[in-house]
Length: 437
Image (cartoon, rainbow, N blue to C red):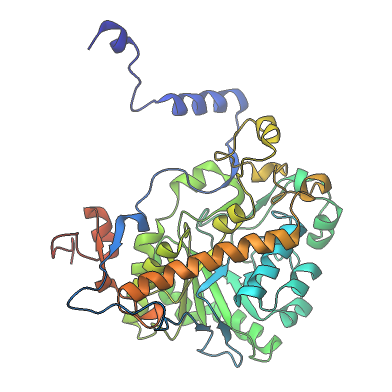
């Protein structure tokens, strides 16, 4: 090594990014708040591969043999389960975090695709309800925007216990995004930072939650499925307690899940990746004899039809997309580049949802920025993107000889790394070895 190269060696413990963050904290005395999701490299579905059919299995012919994608959600107790044409839904994202045009785009696309979209912290807007044929209504610890009329107007209820990007933490909406309408819906002052509670005020455990769910069922005459959403941490026990509390469906959000705003330390250092979380949830449901009886919806880093196929092969009933849907709407698109520069970033690296100054009009309440996203165009982008995901999912399922995407199974996959093999409990490629099995 030359003397010059030796002088330019960077510390692996204190690389430039860590040095910059320490010095930023020293200057400001505050933790960093940002949006988007985890940026660190994590074990993911990219570490799994499918074993296509050959001699021991025959593939399906794509032009002549169907591969079904429908799924029913809420078959355990609800009188009116949700019937989806595709196993891909839109995750809960609040009005406030997103603008009305983004929410309407999601609703229109979900209706055209035969799937659901979901409200978020802050309640249900009329635009969202009108655009969405099937709408899931979230009940969150904050109770912002929650009212019995909207419980009756929705098609399913999602009790949010945790979120993959910040399990154990509450929501956050900074004052610059709280305009008069957002403030009115949340019964909060305009322009003031809002921090949501991290746990529900009227129940403290699964026994109490069971009573709360009974109340929700009575309010809605036992018509609507009730989901429980959890962030991926102690998955086995959390899933079992969701079942005990009476959930019709469980939404499991891995740490790759997105957020509009929270502490960076939460996003990068709390929770577990989606890959092991799916397997742990399915094992818990199987142990209780409730797999496919309590449906499992998986979110957190789902980007492609291949990701969806791998989650279904591990035992999920459906997947849900949040960040990927926003990207389809234009998030991080290389347009209005000068506005990215004003935020101190560039397209592809933007995580400034929390500022309310979204260059492409998705996560903003500023009228001139929101006007950059037209609901009809947004719905078209989403429809095209999700339709592509479904085609990819069917392509993989057919290649594995499956006439329904739910027939995919762990035995259709191998892992590229020892870590992924251990987490997913599938063999390391080229071997029969499953670490820990």
